[in-house]
Length: 132
Figure 1 (cartoon, rainbow, N blue to C red):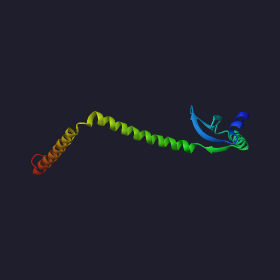
Figure 2 (figure 1 turned 60 degrees about the horizontal axis):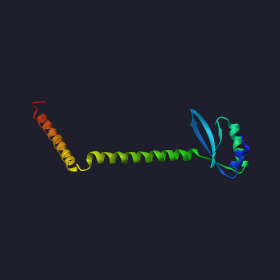
Figure 3 (figure 1 turned 180 degrees about the horizontal axis):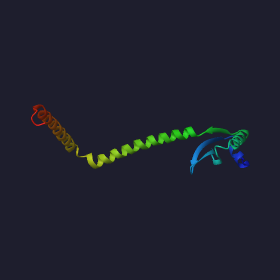
Figure 4 (figure 1 turned 30 degrees about the vertical axis):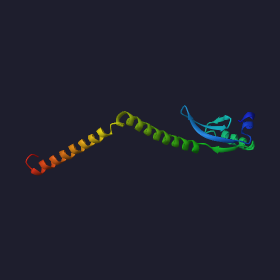
């Protein structure tokens, strides 16, 4: 049951309802700007209904925080991935590429010529029909 302090904290404010998993157990957490005010198990519907009615009677508004939290996690993963790829590129460039551009181009050219020569010789031998 809500305590008078909780009702005072919820009066006229927005209360965010978020589903979290703590220790393998799902818990509905009700939070105001001042912090967590109540934790309820999702399967206790009577307690949830009584709590939400008490919040509404005190003048509070209940919003669901699950969608916003999920969106922030997805955005955070995207930002972290892009930052990680950028940092990896910068590290590789500084260590292996910077100042060695002519050597890299020469290496790619030699590798391409070796592959093309191998393919040409393979097809020449295959079409001669004497070795393979």
